Amino acid sequence: MISSVIGILALLLVFPRAEARARREAVLKDTAAAQQRAWRVARPDYRWSFPRDHWSHPGYRAEWWYFTGQLAAPGDTVPRYGYQFTLFRVGVLPAAPPWASDWSASDVVMGHAAVTELATGRHTFSETLVRATPLLGGFGRPGAGDGLVAWCVAPAGTDGRWTLSWRDNRFTFAMRDARLGIALDLTAEPARPLTLQGPNGYSRKGAAPDNASQYYSITRLATSGTVTAAGRTVRVSGTSWMDQEFGSNQLGAAAAGWDWFSLQLGDGRDVMLYLLRDTTGATTWSAGTVGRPGAAPRHLAAADYRVRATAHWTSRASGARYPARWTVEIPSERLLLTVEPLLADQENRSAIATRLFYWEGAVRVRGAAGRPAGRGYVELTGYGASLVPAI
Image 1 (cartoon, helix red, strand yellow):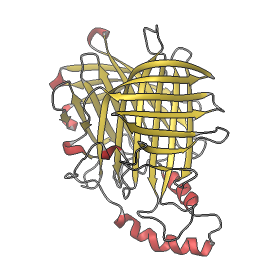
Image 2 (cartoon, one colour; image 1 turned 120 degrees about the vertical axis):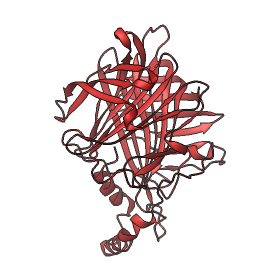
Image 3 (cartoon, one colour; image 1 turned 180 degrees about the horizontal axis):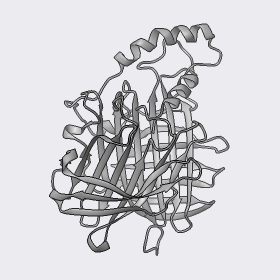
Image 4 (tube, helix red, strand yellow; image 1 turned 45 degrees about the horizontal axis):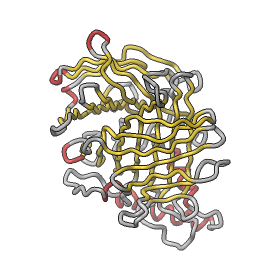
């Protein structure tokens, strides 16, 4: 989801407008060659420490906090809303800029959020992008007392902030976009221990050792609060999924996009799968995890499962053709699942970055003989003329 155009926008945001062009060019020239060497990379021996690792990790080029879920109002028998809330830290410089300015920054904060009204078929996406400076956005510190993890100002035309905090063993997060009539104000309390994705949370994304990220998930969080859609605020509850991931060189040169699945099954198992693709559509790398209550997570290699698209949907807005139904087979778990979107058009289209779009949507999961088996979210990037992700 972090594309090359975001990097360009980030550079423009980081340098103060009053900075002389010659100085900007000199700094860029001096730092460009050193940047790739200076970024920290994911390592298999990373030493995790929680709750400290819920906060940001300066020195890595990309990081995100990602929440999705399906939520119901009192009296509902099925979810009324799907939602996504994601805050990104996009590193522009590996360390603080070598000059003093309230407008210079080494990071950019990007926010993506979406509310999907499952009954009406309306999917609304909002975004914000600012430099990490005292007035616009930034990242908290563990032990500071306020619990703040990350924040940024809301999109133009909306007062307030998008915020993410960790206090009293739970996350709280909020966003609002007055122009689009959507808002989230939610509390998410872990209902399961966190899962390290890959051995020790070292998640490989390619053949090179540094094509990897540090990655953990909380696969079930009891979630409550309010959702606003079409200007109407509704009290809701349900279950969410949370990811935090950070690294500097996750994707290999051949990667053009990925398909990612987070599935919460009715029998208590949780499944995470991802498949990286090249420009021909061939899978270049894949892995996954199966978790169950009271047991250690089981890591899956590419040979342990099969994912096959059985239907497609074409976006009228972007022209991208996305998979729109899948069979997922994990023989060792005796799982044969059908995964299908609850709504076809759950495409997020950026108004900030041209050609940045991806599909992020709520799905249902069915088992043998079509029996309900669970629910989840799927993310699809790099389809159509979308920019190749560069995380």
